[in-house]
Image (tube, rainbow, N blue to C red; front, top):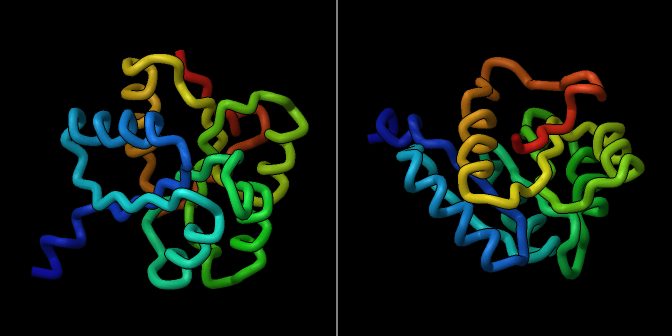
Length: 149
């Protein structure tokens, strides 16, 4: 039974927006990805969940109640037990200072929230194509941002 379970990706999505969460779930289902998805609706819940069980990857929104994404990523990267956790910043914020902040804090990818379902499908496919368990993906700053096409 454990062997069967290990083929699933444990994904934590930290996002307080219900519509964004519902769309994310729909894409995961439509792509038939083997995902166990957990949601944290604010930064405090995110940190509680992380301390209970480390997921295979974290999608992190920046603008959340209680603790925002910047506060959370500082706390996560300050704790060695999360060193191997891939963090994908998933946000509608597009300014360079914010992008650079997350790059310097050691997140693995910065993804602009897509404006269409098709764009989100493309983004999710690309992210799940990365073998996060075999290699931690730390791109150059010029390749850090995944912009939906």
